[in-house]
Amino acid sequence: MRSSESNRAARRQADLLSVQSLAELLRQVATEPDRYLQDTTVQAALRSQGALAKLSLPDRAIVPMSLNHQKRMAEEGLGGYSMLDELRRTARRSLAAAQARTQRGKSDTKPGLLTRVRDLEEQNRLLRQDLFILQRAYDLRCIQARHYAAASGETMKELCRKEQLEIDASFSLRRRPKSDMTVVELEEGRRRVRRSD
Image (tube, rainbow, N blue to C red; front, side, top):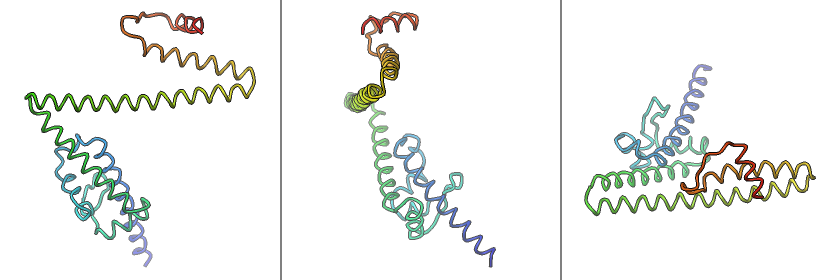
């Protein structure tokens, strides 16, 4: 009796691990679709919920199971099957977009090159948008740090100012145009930054 209970518990743990590993695989396909362009097993599994439940990848601890059982395990291990299904759809869309890019990229014709340029411009726009968001978050953190340091007293305020000057100095290297770039010793760079304040 104990042996069968032990087997059931082990099987349940394996099924939970399988669902969690499957979710991780789907996230990976969504973020790195180019790695899966030739993987017909994964591509076939993304077509439907039933196909995904039947997916077997022992090296990733993903085992096949019925769709209803997978739904139960997803409820328990992921907080809901809808999350797993949304990951499947996202991975499928991402893979389809990567396949379309690959097909367009093979063309050395003018339309193919124009499409590639548009893709790169869009990627550049998204990166600039991310950079803007990160810069704004950085600026807010600096403002908050100065505010907290001011509330803590002069010693903390001076330490905050000094450390933020060092951080600003490292960022200033990135912003200079190439023509203005001159190599200077780190201490000299810090002195120049202090003098400019």
